[in-house]
Image 1 (cartoon, rainbow, N blue to C red):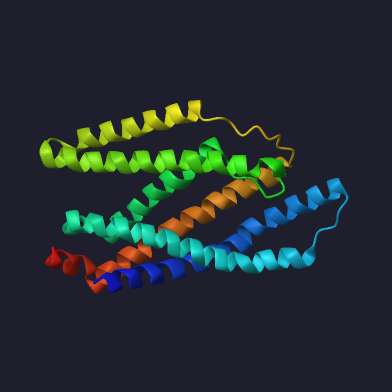
Image 2 (cartoon, rainbow, N blue to C red; image 1 turned 30 degrees about the horizontal axis):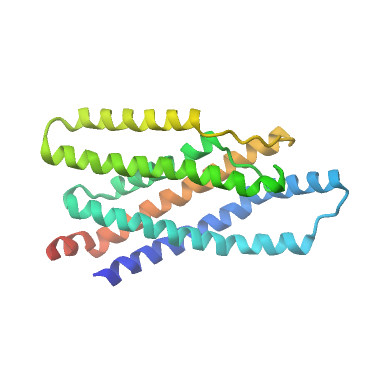
Length: 237
C-alpha cells in the first residue's frame, strides 16, 4: 500500500515537474535573460553565456525535484483526506485542494514579498530576503494546516452547519495573514529594474507555479481514482 502511494507521488511529481521545468524555460527564463543583460551592462561586465546555458539546462532538473517534493506533500495530505472521507475525494476536489495549497504556499507569500529576477536586489541581503520569505510562507502554511485540523475537530464534535465553520475558518486565516503582513518587515532592497520585465517575470512565475500545483492535483487524484488507492486504504483502517 505504501509503495503504491510512493509510486503515485513519484509519477505525478515527475510528470508535473518536467512540464514545470519546460514552462520555466519557455516563459520565465527570457525575463531572467533580459534582467541579467541589463544588470551586466550597468556594471560593465559581459554575460557568461556558458553559465546561462548551464542554468537553463538545470531548470528541468530543478522542476523535477520541485515536482517530486510538492507531489509527496500533496499525496500525504491527500491520503489523510481520503481516510477521513473517501466518498468526497474526486478529481475535481483534488484540483481544488491543489489550488488551495498554491494560494497558501505561493500566492500569500508573493503578496508580501513578490518574486524578483536574480539580478534584482543587493546580493548581500539575499539570506535576509530568503529568511523573511520562508518565515512568512511558514506562517501561512502552519496557520492553514492548524485551522484545517480545527475545522475537522469542530465538524466531529459539534456537527453543526459546515458553511458557518468554513466562513469562520477563512476569516480566521485572513486575520492571521493580515496581522502577519503588517508585522513582518518589508523587503528594503531598492528595485531598479524595467517595470515590464519585473511584472512579466512575476506573472510568468506565478503562472508556472499555478500550473505545477494544478497538474499535481489532477495527476495524483486521477491516479488514485484509477488505481483504487482510496478504497484499499479504507479497507486497511
